[in-house]
Image (cartoon, rainbow, N blue to C red; front, side, top):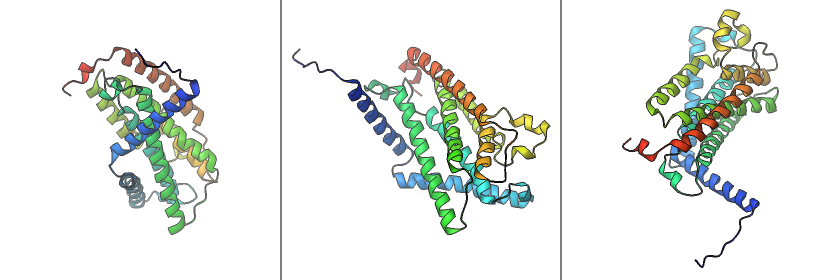
Length: 273
């Protein structure tokens, strides 16, 4: 009754929203591990384990010579880092707080803030891990040279953005059928172990095999980033604009689905789960 009615300017509202997003990002980062440094080390070890496994596989199969001209480990890491960034973005967004979460009862929290927090926290961890691993490799083992670092970083961000788009699509469907979405997301992540094309380059594939991977935006991103990383590789059968268009379409469909789900979801759907 006696409360003063204070108006809120657009700038103040924007800063308030950014503050909420910031604390949500911190919360999302601490959900993976209580200590941020340990969580970072765990993420780095996951990437290094995959790099080491693919290095051993290439050596045992004797197909190292079919790789690109240049640093062989950089060739492997260019595929592994992009793949992990994409998959981690999908997982972070898909597992963010949904419209039926108890966190949504606390204003001004909403699903957009939750999605933003999951996406940005995932990107932060992946960029920091990438910089540390490449820096250690450059200093301790051999100097590395990236032909077009800005364009390569753009493909890295595109892999993250496409992962966010796929994650939003899964998040929108998750309240309706959690079990089915969980199976679909697992199949998607496991299929991309091969379908992403991180073990080979598109220029070396025959047309009959190329058709098996050409549908996948991540395949185009990995092939394009190798064209920007290595001086002597020019990708002929991939197009990063295709990946961007698919990511934008999935983002639009996912946001529409998330809006519809938010309007119709009930807290009772998650009761007892």
